Length: 201
Image 1 (cartoon, rainbow, N blue to C red):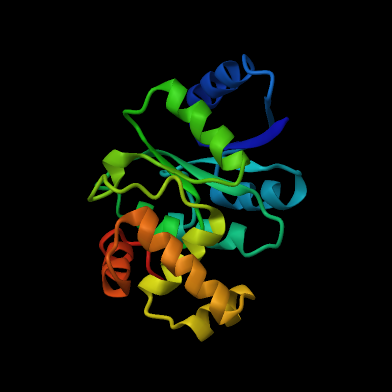
Image 2 (image 1 turned 180 degrees about the vertical axis):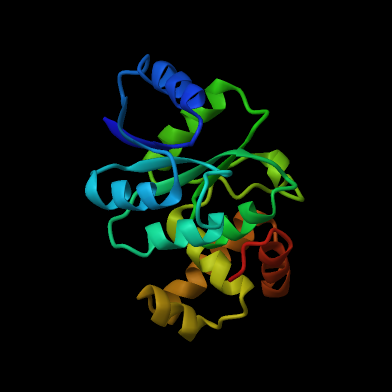
């Protein structure tokens, strides 16, 4: 069972999501929040795996809200909803720890698929929200994505290893794997890939 928190200030939208998600046996809404402070409290108090966070939730700025939730050990993973390419906070929120973002144009099937993928430890970002659609980052593991962001920030093998608790040799393995997956011929191209997509931090 995948336990979810819905964070949106629009009652009609929340009720619609509740009805939709109730049709799936593996999904369960365990809490709702209508502003950022309520969401922070619910995320800490109610055990859940994923937060469905509307990008326009009242209160703290989106990236700050994501950071405040994700800095707590064992916190739920965050999927941003109703995102648009022009929303200034979406990329910052992803850098702060959100693991997915769905464009407002996406169909219901994309939402269900994204929830299940994130529950398995993956990521899900709508292609229309990225400046370049290929190669995608959705297929990267959580650890690969962490390494990619640190590579984009200019960290060397030792620095990445210290931050993630990995040996320099293991970091090199991850970098080689990322280059193959993302089609980067060398390390500078891998760095450019991360920077171009706003993933470096």
